[in-house]
Length: 360
Image (cartoon, rainbow, N blue to C red; front, side):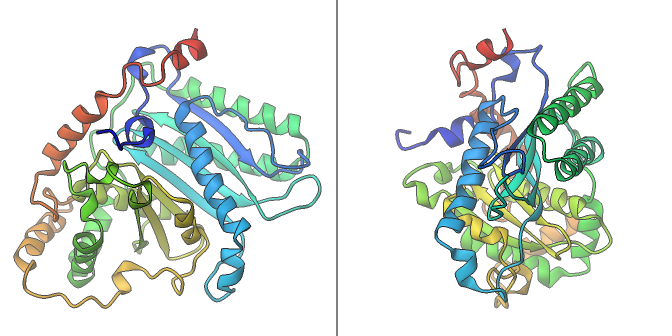
């Protein structure tokens, strides 16, 4: 597959088995903070995936700022500033983080500050109960100090605490996690909204049909799709995020990285499927007037897929995720097994010498 970039092969697909003694969680930070007179030194970006995440996310934000896309869109289409939870997931590996408005030591405030945690074989419950509160603690400390050394020391201290709390043996998630049953109950009672989502996936995300690998072939600009989804009433925003990403992994190829962007205090969340391009990050601050929520798009739903949709809804009625993909009818369990086998091909030696140098 000569056209495949490094992103599909290596991102959130580290060779952890080759380093059994390496910690399974790392904290990092980058962006703007008053302790630095310009962009702060990158802190704690100890894995290739964290380095790549910084390049993609901060590069995407820089693209919006340098081209003034948010400014040109106008206040009616753009939310002010940054206040987001992010969660980038690929099977049992993830990067979770916070983005907030900040400024450098010279008072320049266009760019945010970002903290991130790279975790492997951790359940979303652990991320929600341990990692996110730790990141909130780091955020609070960063906001109260103007000292670069304080920020650096605090981040490292919280990283050591998280690593100490990890169980001696790794834990691979065995259930979809928090929010899924409430998500299923909600859309059982809103079948038309659920069918709109399925229609949107068939119409716009066929590139990510399980097992096809079309998403990592060809030109780079064709390797991502964005969709805006509603937060589910009655559960926390983080639970909504987990439920949506868990659902998408049953419908699309689970080998694909899913990047969730959750604006605090709003009623939606965004997902970038595949390798994000710089233009994708317009949605980070876009209101629904600039990026509509899928369930609000007035799709005309014909009878063509009604039987298949009904079958998927029966899983929701049991409080479960769908068992088959709406794109090809393939079992979600089988798709996951295929994805795991495909990804493991790239792990041994995927970053020659990197882990051996880092953890020697």
